[in-house]
Length: 130
Image (cartoon, helix red, strand yellow):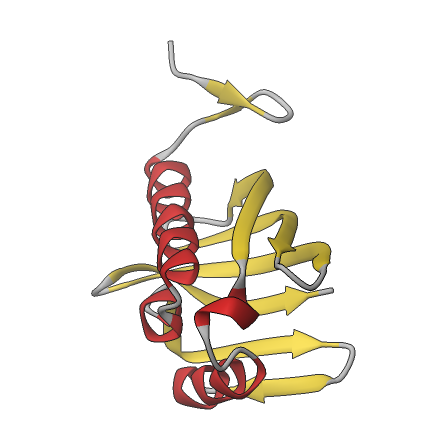
């Protein structure tokens, strides 16, 4: 019998891989490594917020570098994964929350991620952060 999460969904390879990538992203962020954080994104990823949409991993990376120029601005990132729902063998839907603890303030919100399996592994294709 496999492990269960959320609404009694079995844990799949996608669950394990996505959780691993997100843990690597948290660690990279906490080191102040935006480029390492962005390795979790597909080259064609789009980042969608209330302020607009930015597409392409490099364009999203550039946006993060402008918004978070140093380790102090980045703070300590924590993801809480709510659910991961496989959408066939090569896609998955993931929802959850994020929090950012910094010396000057604390920020938090939610996310919805569309993941795609690529030759490099599971990567974020669409990131709707709010």
